Image (cartoon, rainbow, N blue to C red; front, side, top):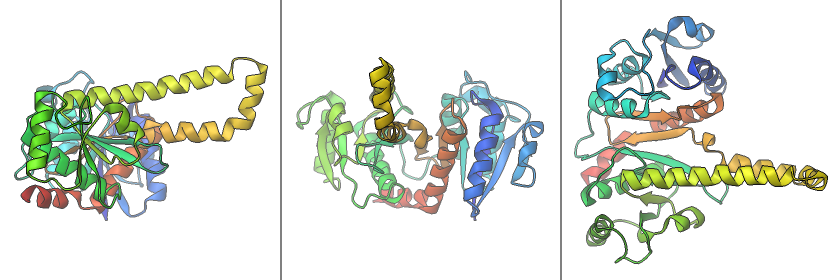
Length: 326
């Protein structure tokens, strides 16, 4: 039986969204137990459905790692310590990103041989049901070639065992597809990949091709550029959605046209919805750690819970240990 530890507090929508998400998740996942951590009085709807652990303090969104570590009775720290004690298979929170990721790294420690943890996320591609894995997308502002090499291993293993892509193709984010293009870091990393004959490494790729090319499975980059890349893609998706709505509301004819195109438009919106992914995961630490979006509604948080379950079922921690050992 898989056990998921949930920090129910700290998100923009409070415990209301996380409680609803847990209830919806448990309806369709009877092979999972949930440990809900938070203010007991706000979790009464979960009584009888899951284990409730009272944690009266809530970590503010502005909190850093040291702030979180000092808040011993916060829902975030109680949840992380439960995972450290082996009470669950994974932990999830939609609280402070920096505070959660840094305190998770300090509390759980790194997996043997891992130099730096990477924040990894997936988002929908043009091909229905296919997801692009990006690592790192924000855990580190600076990285070296050896760290990016490890990110590639972890991202490829995640893509293979969690996203179910048989032989994931790995690319290095750059400003050109040629090996000699890119920053000094990209050039050195490309050279390292070639020298070590990284499995299924396809070379450099530009950001636009990474999104449009269905052959791309994993994109590797330092956390600074990865975060910019991710947010630019999310912003573009929101912008296109806004333009589409404005086009259909232009006049009576376009409104009538929407009635005929409604099914297709909804399909596009669903495919591009970042909430279907739910959040990002921290690979490299000694535990399954998923950071849900701070503004997660019930649907988005439930999607993030599904990621924890898939990672636990795939035994991803052992797969990463074996991959890094190679």
